[in-house]
Every structure is written in structure tokens, then in C-alpha cells.
Image 1 (cartoon, rainbow, N blue to C red):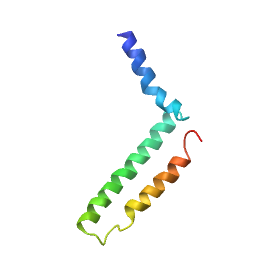
Image 2 (cartoon, rainbow, N blue to C red):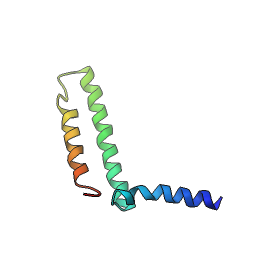
Image 3 (cartoon, rainbow, N blue to C red):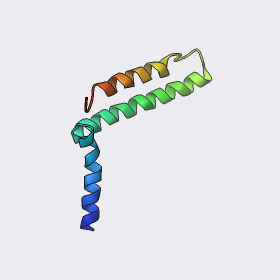
Length: 75
């Protein structure tokens, strides 16, 4: 059981280190990204029903996320 716990702990916390972020930096960045994507998904569905609403929201969101990704982690 201890081996499983050690492996789980290593794999759980190794990703933030591989992308040059602390656990809390990774947590907050991923949380903000998840919120942006959730809102973007709702806008995309609304746009599918009413094409005159949120015309550029998906393209704008993708550009914003690309910029966000350039500013975090390993550079």
C-alpha cells in the first residue's frame, strides 16, 4: 500500500514541476482555464442557436488562451 501511495503522490505532483509551476500556480491557472472554457462552451451553444450572438467569442477565447499559455510555465 505504501508503494501505491508513493507512486500516486509522485505522479500527482510531478506534472506541475515538469511544466515549471508550483502546485498552487498550476491549480489556479487550470481553474481559471476551466472557467473560461465553461463560459466559452455556453457561448458556443448559444451561438449555435442564435448565430447573431457571440459571433467571435470562440475565436477570441482561443486567442486569449494561446496568450495565457505563453505566459505560464516553462518558457
